[in-house]
Image 1 (cartoon, rainbow, N blue to C red):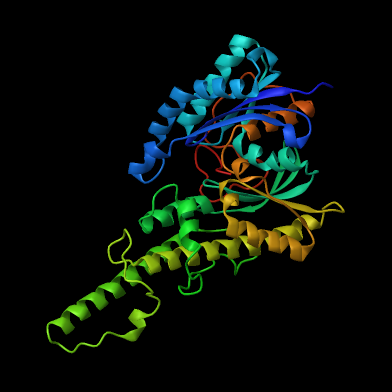
Image 2 (cartoon, helix red, strand yellow):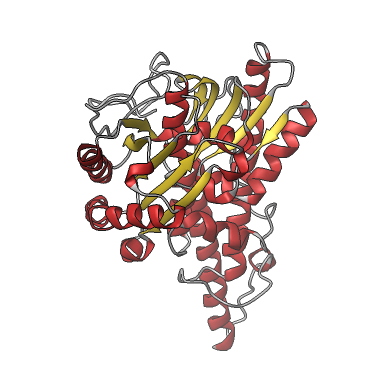
Length: 398
C-alpha cells in the first residue's frame, strides 16, 4: 500500500450524523470533506438526547451525509479504498444505523469495511492533525467518557484512570438543566461562566484527596444543585422581607443575602438571579478544570516513567472544545515541559474524519478489515484494565 489511501468514514454513535472523506498524505490536506448534521432541534424539548429519536434521524440522513461528503471531496465510490464506520460504543440504535449503512455500501461496491471503536477515533485524532508520535498520553474527555490513556499504537491503549460515574460532558449537560439553560449544555455553561465569578460560590473537588488518576463528577453536579437551591431560598427570603417592609413591618434583611447580586434580573429558574447563574457556571467550570488539571499532573508522572525523550500530552473529545479547560491543561504541560496538542475544535466533537483516520491507521499497520462487524453499546479501549464502576451485563462501560 504505497499509494495514498482514500477512506469514507461514517459516524452515528450519539446525536450527530456524520460522513467524511479522508486521504492519506500531509496532515494539512488529509480531510477532503467532513459533513456533520446535528440533531439539537429534535431533542431540545426533552432536555437531552432521546435514543429512539436519534436512531430514526440517523437512518433518515446518513445516506445524504455520505452523498454530500463525496460531492464536496469530488470523488466517487469507485475512488475509495475502504469504508470505516463507528461500531461502538454508543447509543445502540444510532450505532446500528451507521453499521447497516456502511455494510450496504460495502456490499454494493465490494470495498473492505473496518469497524472502528468511537473512542479510538478520538484517541488517534492527534495523529490525524499533528502526526504525534507513539506513545503519547491522552485525556479523552467527552459527553459520555473521561479517561487517561497511553496511546501506544493504532490498537494499543493503556488506561491509567477514568471517571467512576458521570463524564464531564454529561455533568455539564446536567448542570445546564439544573440552571435552566438550553441543551447541549457545555457551550451554554461556558458562555455563562465567561462573565461569572468562579470564587464566589465554593464547590468541592471530588477525589483529589485520593491517590491515582480516577475522577468523579456526580457529586459536583449535586453540589451545584444544592447551591442553586440555597441561592433561590435566600432570594425568596429577601423578597418576603421586602414585602414585610412595604406592609409597615420593620423586618431587617441580612446583608449576607444581598452579597453578589449585581443585578436584579431573574434567570429562567424562578428565584435564581442571572448573576447567581453566571457565578454558579463559573464555579462549576473552575472545579472541573481544577480536577482535570490535578489528575493530569498525576497521569503525566505515571506516563513519563516510560515516556520517550520528547513526552507529549493530547486532549480530545467534545469537552476539549472548552477554552478554559484547554488553557488549564496547557499550563500544566508547560510547567511539566511536556508538548501539548489539542486538535481543532471541529475535530474535538463527534465527526467521521476521525473514524476514517482510525481505520486508515489500522490498514497501514496491516490490521485487516472486519466484514463481520456488529454494533456494540460498550467497547473498552483497554480490555485488560479492570472495569470502572458501573459495568454491567453488557460489559465494561470504558
